[in-house]
Length: 424
Image (tube, rainbow, N blue to C red; front, side):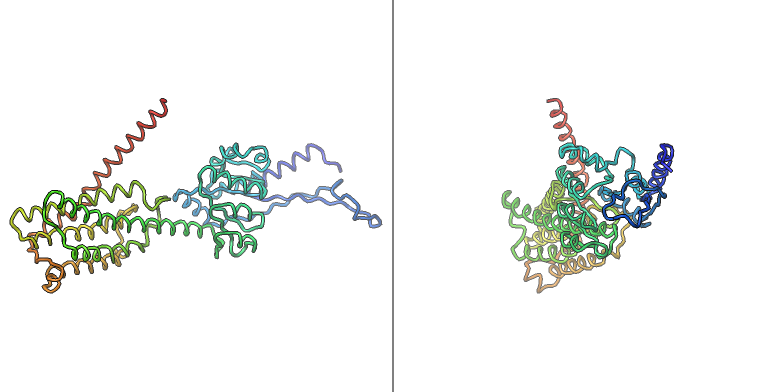
């Protein structure tokens, strides 16, 4: 029987109902052919008899929704690019926790009507692209990159290959991916799971964070040493450190503690997004802590001379203050970028072991006569350790309000500059 408009509307409504239930819908129809006719020359896409609709689902894995939320917490924006119907894409996006209102969906037909400049203007506000072709995927990746975004593209089919090649990081599925996709990608997942990508992001950020911590720890100590020696010369004081003491200091503070910081497992639950190893924030911390430690050590050196302490004792005080300050600060750098309120000391067992070795070496250089003679140090009475540990332990505490004040002033200057720019 001929399809009436009412029947067509009913079929269309049923299609939308299935699509809204996250089903990929196929319509089936048939046409009887005459056995005596030349079937190869017949256009069989006309006069078909409608049979019905079939809905299929490839449901997302249960843990993917949690992975999506974790990606948002890490500062990543998951974008769905699919060939499915927009209604189907929205339904699946709702299950995954991706922004899935009608305004956040762009279809391939709409992409064809957008220029590259127009797409670049809206691409960051879109979370779902539906009914797309391989050319559309390539345009989407390129548009995001033009907006300054670092794009990771994942896929398993040949149609994903152009976009994977264009992306900053192309990711292919190891099990279901085609050979062409694997050869094009920068990274191939052995487990076809979205969570694997997140683990890679976490590990990369952990490496960047560890490099920052190790650099901060090393630069702070070296800056303090420079301040102690240079300021002493400029104000006419004797040299606070002899060369062999500087070498020992670098060995005690730059070897094991900094090495352990560089391989720290990191905070896996929540990490800051960093693109640079060294930035203004790190410079401020290094300069602030280095200046405080350097001036504190120099102050104790001058105070020791003022109360009549022998030169070797005063030099040993400056030496011990610098070493103790750098070792104590190692814990502050270990905590850098972490929001942990309760420390799990089992994670720090290697760091604690390294610090214990450095502390024992420091005490040995001061109190074992052959070592003290070699390093030109003197035995320090117990009363000297109170100001030494006071200065060494207060550097991190004093640096926090100073850094907070600097950050507030910098924010105020930036706001003022923005107001001036806006007025102009």
